[in-house]
Amino acid sequence: MIISESIKETRDQVKEWKKQGLSVGLVPTMGYLHDGHKSLIERARKENDKVCVSVFVNPMQFGPNEDFDTYPRDFDRDSKICEDGGVDLIFHPEVETMYGENFSSYVDMHTLPDNLCGASRPAFFRGVQTVVSKLFHIIPADKAYFGQKDAQQLAIIRRIWYLILILI
Ligand code: PAF
Image 1 (cartoon, rainbow, N blue to C red):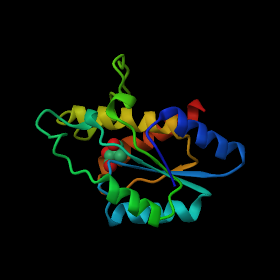
Image 2 (image 1 turned 30 degrees about the vertical axis):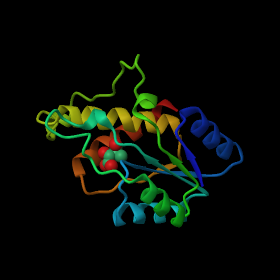
Image 3 (image 1 turned 180 degrees about the vertical axis):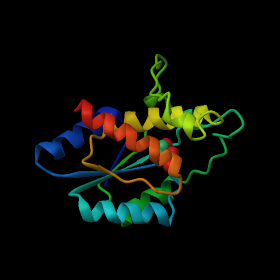
């Protein structure tokens, strides 16, 4: 199993797999993996030749009163779960790698999130849309797997996916 902190290394590896005609599944996570993640990994394993899991606690989706620093993390345990689940690559970037000092572009939607609870959680929706778009570009997977616990998050991710499909 490859563990990569680098965008370039990850993208090059995924491109290489795609060049070989292999299908790639992506399970985006913020780590601290649980049974729900395990079942997403299991499904991705069944449906794809290669499986990538991203483990990144995204500071951009935390509001001012939500604590990014105390969000639970246990990368050793996450790696073990991924290894046992047959994952081929974990993308585990540093915050600085995802949001460098010149970072200034966001992905946002001005309709759907406000119809949901975007008005009360603007940081969350903008943060999720931005990081998921970045992940989709770093790991251009054939399929991506998300839990369905947060229906509102799922609704915006479906729109991003549509946008990416149109762009490619
Ligand atoms: O649901 C999550 O774990 C996160 O919001 C996600 C989709 C990985 C984006 O950081």
